Image (cartoon, rainbow, N blue to C red; front, side, top):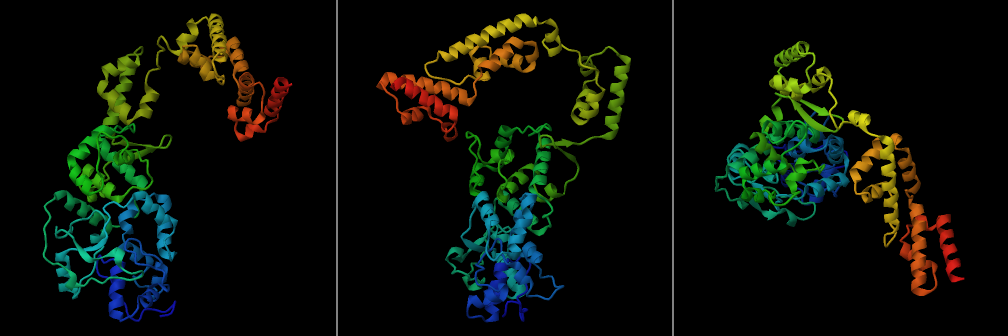
Length: 522
């Protein structure tokens, strides 16, 4: 078949059949003696190796059919590849690039390499798998067996339709020759069913099946994260401020599954170890997370995928300033009633403080504070400054005396730093630390700089730039080397000074080194 010829014969894909199996059946029925011929028929190239998860070069395959048929690149991606299993959990910014690679790339590029390396090979399977009862059903309906897509998904150990344990086809995928495709041959199959007794395995299989069968590509990782947070709040495992009770979540998660099951799913959690995979999952430390772990969290939070993806009973809002999700479920009538009650209280009690309002109207205060913060803050009584606040502090401090006291502390701190055994760079932070009153000094110098002119000017004059510190350090090193050896060498000075390359070449540094060598070696 030429590179642009149409199929004269094609093995129409069965329901839930992986494209790999379609190609294997075509090779068998077309009577091709070489897999090279089959690859050329499908893709016009012999470099398209046996790929189950993400078949590629699908635009060429699409060109083999007349326009207007259902056999498009999108059809093969959505109905006969594993991409729909990953799609809902991918970041929106990269999803289109994966689809582009499957359509047009003859070889898997960096996108899929990055994805596979990032998510890891959890529950990796070296063999194709089948369900005995599905196989018998296929033979009865179609006269032959084929490999189902759902049975090849990592983490699926039972058939979601029959609750049978999946069995391995006796030929390992890794031992199939380059470019070869294995047809499901019934003489190699053990068709005696073994039923599953683990409810959790069936739930994982059902969840995976739902994700594959339904059009969920409109979802993305960002929206999924918000839905997780929604359920965390409902379960009392997070606050709507963005705080997640990770320790409580982890304990309940392990109690729900048990570590024996989590180990089977390559997702074991050691409660004594910080920053395990579930911590990074909750903190969204990874851009790509294996769908197996998404499914485990999903089932823990809401029992099934249908509820998770379809439930829309909450108004979800993103705080764009700090990117933390917040959940608001507002009863409008209740909100309006509480607003009126708060305003009426303020009118009836004109001299009341915020504390008085909170005590007298605790129920209304709590509701509006959590659900209607913007309105609430705008309508509260003006806050009354307390002792210790900035307003009170400015009124009662003698700033002249404070400036003199602080100046003495700064000068003493500078002398202490200069008297250290080895040179240390003089910085504002170090000066504050040496005074023994670090927080107070930093607070004063940052907020009341204009009220402390002597201290501020003194500090500005003694703080060293990197170059000034290196000049002082060079003088120290030269004195030490001369006392030790009686002469100076340039390379020894540079080595002990540990100067960066950029500073070694500055005119002042070069001049200071030369001045010291001339003075000591003369």
